[in-house]
Image (cartoon, rainbow, N blue to C red; front, side, top):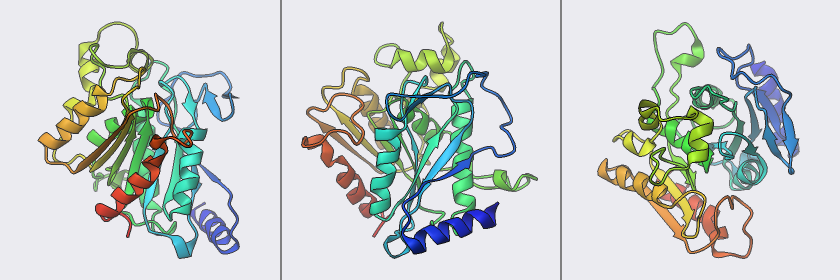
Length: 299
């Protein structure tokens, strides 16, 4: 399989073919099941629901433009759908033009199994890092991005990761799943009722008030000095996910001396992704790329 993938990517690079490669996150079957037995559905363009199998959509830059950087992207959707287009594919295509590998992750939705989405993200990061050399990626320049609930997922893994288990018999488990940097767009961060997004909370951890789970998934409480450098984008007029989510995460990063940059645009509402054209908020991708330069992910 590895040899076939390598030949495909080499052929695509040499011929300029702009195609996506789809790769299963758990080719031998996931170790757990999210309970979804209905067929996956696509609607409203490239939105998906009933996701029960995790896949990666890989966009590699051309060799002469390659910076060696990569970004695993988690689209948002409140943990009940995934907006694969403007929060996934479109960002990956833009990154590819800039010489950054964009890897869109269609993660399994939880359906009462709160650990499953983050299991998929950690496995995806291990896969990318293990295949980094063959894919033209620097294993020390692999980031993680997420929008809205995808931002909650990215900040969950960005604060709860491991460096690999050298004693494991599974080659992938020996590989670190720590992202080297984070990109969070209008993220859900907390599950505290005062300013959290209760829809995402309900869909991930269920009804009721399991305060241990609320605390576990209030990611501002889990920032440490090892949390990756983080870039945050949001708008002042976001009525869906209060800006305080990002602000509290930024403050936690600063308390732990983690490099961070945050941009709050006056307008753009929630869920803009790559969609807001001819508005100040559409400057965010270039701001993000400039930040990657300042932290020496790209040159």
